[in-house]
Length: 237
Image 1 (cartoon, rainbow, N blue to C red):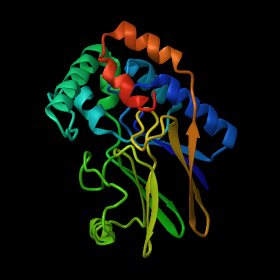
Image 2 (cartoon, one colour; image 1 turned 180 degrees about the horizontal axis):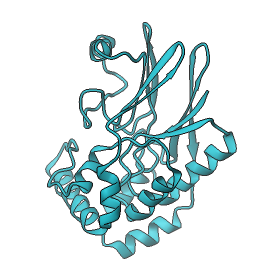
Image 3 (cartoon, rainbow, N blue to C red; image 1 turned 90 degrees about the vertical axis):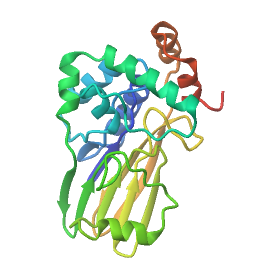
Image 4 (cartoon, rainbow, N blue to C red; image 1 turned 180 degrees about the vertical axis):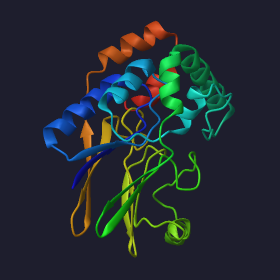
């Protein structure tokens, strides 16, 4: 089975459309979205409606939770006071912009999704099996992953949230992070998604998609969102 996994779109519609075109070109058996549809960029309603239209398994991200339930915090980890202030600006703007219908959709996203493809059982989450906003970075010790999955029946963990793609095999456990469609944090601005191929083993390839930046520039200018959010998406510019 060939599975397209993508997440952390963060309201970047041009990036999402480029990923969906690439998925169609490659050809897959199913798609799974690991959440964080909204936040930081100016197309939260358009992205939410596109995901709704796809009718695919979609996990609730911490930002979806914050906006869907009108929370005061998105569950993000901030390193500085400036990041915290900007994050609050993003959350308030997104809460005010997303329609009631789309908030209802965000509130009803899945907490997790499991799929059995013998001899593998795949567990799809946003952050980790334990918490929606837990960051599983690529340098986490092997023992930590094994302990985390000890109570789970799955032997393939598929997660997002960090915006950093990686693939690791730890004993009999496979760990996949699909990166980010809309806000990569690994130094490559292009939208990222993961092609997961499951047969007698698990093979993962990460696809990078360029996209037209002009709609983002124009929409940011009209939205009133801080320019810093756009600079974060395109750190090379």
